[in-house]
Each structure stands twice: as structure tokens, then as C-alpha cells.
Image: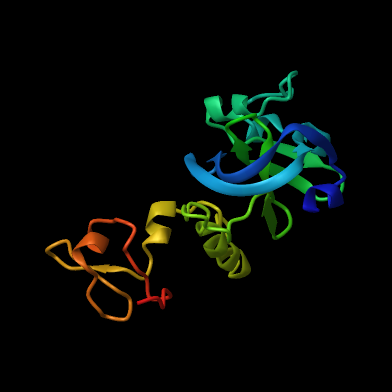
Length: 191
């Protein structure tokens, strides 16, 4: 919806993005996230505007084939000039098909991703987006530049011997301390 508000064109994907195993590259942090998705249309990133060369690694033209994985290979989060909202950065790219998965408006307090960060079908790779939102609301300039591993461990305490302690002060069993699936957080109320 944000892309459409910016005047972008959308396309029907040849193969829709479905399931909890879609690899997405965060171009800002350079980390890959395993995401949950359920959509059949995607943003045509070049339709948002012309590249700003000084913010896009010197590049002046969008890739002719539309495959955004070229930005992944270059390690660049390209920025375009949009006539409605100013500078817009490509922040996330689907590694399966090279389509856009996220944008950031640099001149307005707004960002979006086209997947479900709240879904957590197992992976919590996109949890940091909620932290990014609070950082955005606090006025932090680089709100999307987050150490995702550190963000997922926020609230956990580790003793000098490497054993984990829950945020409520309770001990974590040996399997949990080893990082297996029985690990519980303070918000997990199951016995």
C-alpha cells in the first residue's frame, strides 16, 4: 500500500511468495532473513523513480532485466528520487526471484516490508522490524540498521558460565541454554 501511495507500479508474480521459508536480503544490515510470506503481487522498484547515483554506488540506470539481486551482489541499498515523497531506498530483496520486499522513505518517517514479520512460523529473523519501528518513533536516523541477532536476544541474560537466565530471573534448562527448541522466553507461558 505504501508503494502504491508513492505512485509505484505493481506486477503479478510468476510464482507467488508463499510459506515460511522465503529468503530475503536486508540491504542495510547485509543479513539474510528467513521470512513468512503470502502474496502474489510485487513492487516494480524502478517505477518509484530514477536512481540517485551518489546514493546508489554511482549507478545511473536500473537493471534492464528488473532483477534486484544485482544490488545484493554489489552490496548497495539503492536510492531513487520519487516525485511524491522524495528519496526512497530499496531495503529488502527476495533472494529466490530478485523482487523487492522492502522500502524506506528517507524524507518521511516510513518504511515497509512485503512479508509478515509477526508471523514467526519458527524463525524470528524479522523481529527487529518492531524494534526499528520504535526507533523510528523515537526519531533515530538509522533506525533500520540493527544487529538482528542481538535484537532477538534482547531481554536474555547469560551467566559467566554460559548458562542462560530468563528475563524474569528464572533458570533455563540445559536444552534451552544450548539453543534447542525447548528454549522459552518470558512471554512464553506454556509449562
